[in-house]
Image 1 (tube, helix red, strand yellow):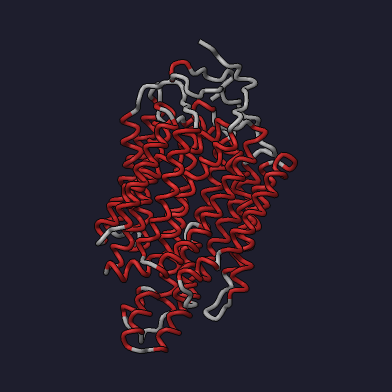
Image 2 (tube, one colour; image 1 turned 30 degrees about the vertical axis):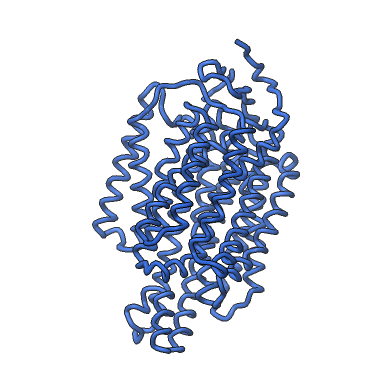
Length: 518
């Protein structure tokens, strides 16, 4: 058996082409969610979907995705990251085809569930392959490139989605996924090397507890704004969440080969960086969704025009990613992460000043700050976090970080949505109907039926007021993340253990890096 020197691993000569493939696989996840958010108004009208059904169309994906991340990360380490990613791409592509031709809300919800399963298999596998493919010297450049591509998808998908909706129908937004999946699937099979950690005994009990705990957690977060802490569904979800996650932690701490190595949290870069990024996601989780609604409902933009409005954010994020790739080795991950988060907080504060009469100018300035700050902060923080993960645990380490952030996204969407809904309802006059109090979409629909132009103005002003408070909360969340990153992250981060060359090696022949203190 040939054992490679893990201290000085050879660099894969095609690693940058492989990075392009990995970026494609994660790009579809970004494109799907943002394009769908732009399509919500048209989708609701065409499918005659109720508000509850729309909520399930959006939330079903998140519930399944968050619930399966830990399990899929563990599976990728045990059975092969390339293999798991291929399965995920296949499921995601097939479900996208079904979603494209869905004839009712039930079919679309079912397709979204399968897409959530595929996405959960794709994300940790792709990130762990990247982690093992690049050494400490190149890892931040790779992360920055991945962040740049994700930002292009973040902004490009609403533009493309809006164009497809204007020219065709809402189902066309899922067509974006299909050619990208096809290209990524073929390229993965041809180019990406297989890698895995040393074989460990499966942990089915841990997998079941993690799925129950994470699904219950996200469900509770989603339900919280609807009925508050006293609602029966919220209380039940909270009880299940606490019981299952405590059981999961106890179980994982006692078995010989846990699915999740809890010792990762002893590393300050991993623990502090994960919590800081979670706060960023809480602060910004619902920001773009709220802003998209403001552009369409508040300013009357078409889906295409709303998508184009996000272009300044994409351009500035590309600048931030490019600058960060060069500055990270000089300044360190902590400095870039803190500076970037502070710039993001400034952007959120700018957006909190928007009113019903604001033009695109202030929106663009705020989005530029958000993009630039995110381009600097996110790759730096992720590099610091994943640099502390042993290569043989790259899959589950990546999944654990993704899971924590997904919980932050769900909490952010729920929190900002709750603040927006509460303030909107409070600002609507008592003389308006109960229907108009529910949401700006309901108010505008009622105004269209009755011809009440005054209701349109009132609803838009109320929505702008709620949005302003939501963006203020977002700014506080990102500011808290910056403070935590300053305290928790090391100045330049430890040099992680180099990854062994595990390409195409059988699991039992892959050496564990020496000197592992985890």
